[in-house]
Amino acid sequence: MKKISLTDNVAFEDKCLMSITLGNIKDAYKLVCIYESEREFSRGIGIDWTKEAEKGLDDVEVEAIKTFIADRNDKYGENTAVIMSVIVFVRFLGSSIFTSGTMRLFSRLMPKLDKDEIQKINETIQDDYFELTNYIKIKQARAMGFSEEQIKRMLG
Image 1 (tube, rainbow, N blue to C red):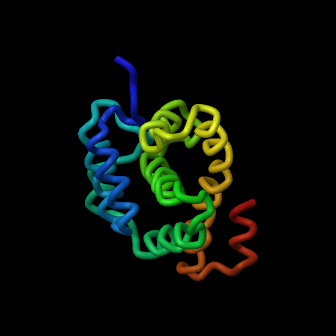
Image 2: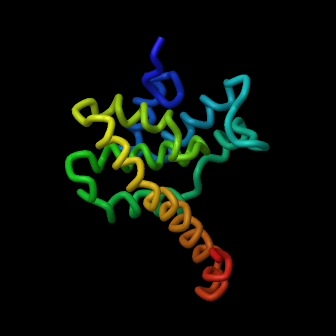
């Protein structure tokens, strides 16, 4: 059977992506944590997904994600909402954005696009994926009182 998703659980993916699209970032993260905690071989070496589900995301990270998404409004045209949701979802999973699973997810969510268009999107979102991670780190460091110089050193 041909795989059509990143996780092989389309209902789970769709629920998470819809939560992200609607701005329910904490709900989406909790869904990912519960999903991973129930898997025999979960992603994220050393992550206790049950504890992560209980802890959830802090407000600084949630606001950073929402701002990051809002700042890229229409960057990818009509596909912006889908692409931004996938970037956040893949980050929550602790997966790489560069996988064939991500390509399958894009293909399923944007069926009008051909393989070359999907590949081009996958290549262009790499920067956004890493920018999101750094953006969250910067916001969290500022919230903890780090200076701009300390943050620059932290990010290398």
